[in-house]
Structure formats: structure tokens, C-alpha cells
Length: 273
Ligand SMILES: Nc1ncnc2c1ncn2[C@@H]1O[C@H](COP(=O)(O)OP(=O)(O)OP(=O)(O)O)[C@@H](O)[C@H]1O
Ligand SMILES: [Mg+2]
Image (cartoon, rainbow, N blue to C red; front, side):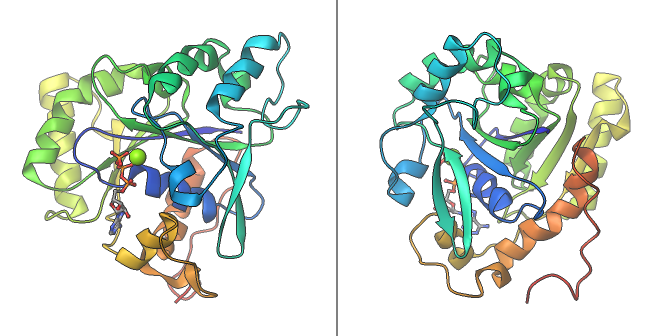
């Protein structure tokens, strides 16, 4: 199954929220797992009251100890996976301690083991890679990913920071690069796509189709609070604007993720209201 990496370059556009939101709304025939690998440390333990163990540290120990790893998320006697619930949906997660030091130590162990660990056969791994900086230890995860989803607000300042890293992002891997417009932007997706494509062609001598722009996600305090663990999800949690946004997004992401059965385009009548 594919590896979907979620990252951002500026601000706090909602990478952790989106990793969890996408896992919670994943197509029903997919078993997702959220992998917290933000080098600044994880948030899900505190937000969702998860235990301190098992964690990413245990996952790295399993990866280190196994010579023939098939699926380290399920095939070991000491699982690293915990679960949290969003409404009626159970979401498997590998949570990371706050602080980041343990994540930074664990990351090379996981990425050295390569795709057998991070893209196991029967799981969709949604990796929250946190904020991307030039020397971040998370770049190897992006190199292994099938899709790198970069959250960005459609504002001049945030787009300028993104442009500075675009060359490295394009060089990083063979996966698809998708810019997901976060809440709170001012420019429409078509304008952002035009500006980024022009930059890729004129400044980087690249292919205009190398970058896909999706979104924007809506501003939705309630939906974000449900995913933050601040608000208990009601029976109709899937109808919250942000959750509907993630459900819709799967129609565009599905075809970009190899091994995922093509997700039928979600028509407006099918999106939960
Ligand atoms: N679409 C949205 N509408 C309103 N608030 C949002 C939305 N998405 C995220 N938020 C809020 O923004 C804040 C930051 O979100 P999140 O933790 O996902 O950011 P991040 O990009 O992972 O940054 P960091 O890892 O630095 O915290 C949270 O309080 C979250 O509830
Ligand atoms: Mg985060």
C-alpha cells in the first residue's frame, strides 16, 4: 500500500489535523495508520489522551530488530500501534513523544529499512512529517512517499517560503507533489496553480504538471476541534465542513496513490451534509 507524507513549510496550516482527518475519512476498503514523525515531536498523545507507550520509539526498535520485516504495524508480538476514535471510527496511530529528540533518533532507523517498513502491503501509512526545513531528518520519508502533500495557506508570504523549497521538493523523490491549500488563504487554487507552474517552468526548468494544487480546506473550528480531541464528535461528525473536505479530497488523492482501488469521485449529493 502507498505512503502518504503530509508536511508544510510555514505557519501551522494543519498538518497533524489533516493527517488524522484523512485517516479518519479514508475509503472503507483501506486500513490507514497515522505515523507521527514530526521532528519537533508528536501531538496526538496529549490531544487524544493516548498512553506514552507504545510509540514511534517502539516502532523503530521493531524495525531495527527485524531482518525480514513484512508489516511491522501488525506482524509483531509487541505492536507499536495505538488507536484513537473519531466519532464512530477507530483510527490506528503510531504516536510520538513530545519534544522531538526521540523522533529525530527514531527516524533514521525507520527510513533505513525503506519501503517494506513505511509502505507495508496492507496499510496506508499517513505520515505527519511536520514542518519541512532544508536539513530536516524527515526528507528520507518524503523520498519514499508515493504522494507528498504540502499544506500551504494561499497567501503571498507562505507561498514565497514554499517557492524557496520547491526545487528540493521536486528533486526529493519520485512520488507526486501535491499542494493542499489550507484554511485561511486569500488566493483561489487556480491562481496558486498558475503561479507555481510558472515558477517550475521558468525558474526550475521543470514540467508544469509536476505540481498539483488541491483544496482549499474550509475554516472549521468545530471540525478541527473534533480532530484535536477538544470536542467530542457527534453522530454527524462526518458532515462537519472540514471532514467533508477531507472526504472529497480522497477522490483526487486516490488515483495518485498506487494500490488504492480507484476512489469513486464524490458527488455533491454523496458528501455528508
Ligand atoms: N481547517 C481548519 N479550520 C480551523 N482551525 C484549524 C483547521 N485546521 C487546523 N486548525 C487548527 O489549527 C491549529 C494547528 O493545527 P495543527 O496542529 O494540525 O497544525 P500543524 O500544521 O500540525 O502545526 P504544528 O505541528 O506546528 O502544531 C490547531 O488548533 C487546529 O485545531
Ligand atoms: Mg503538527
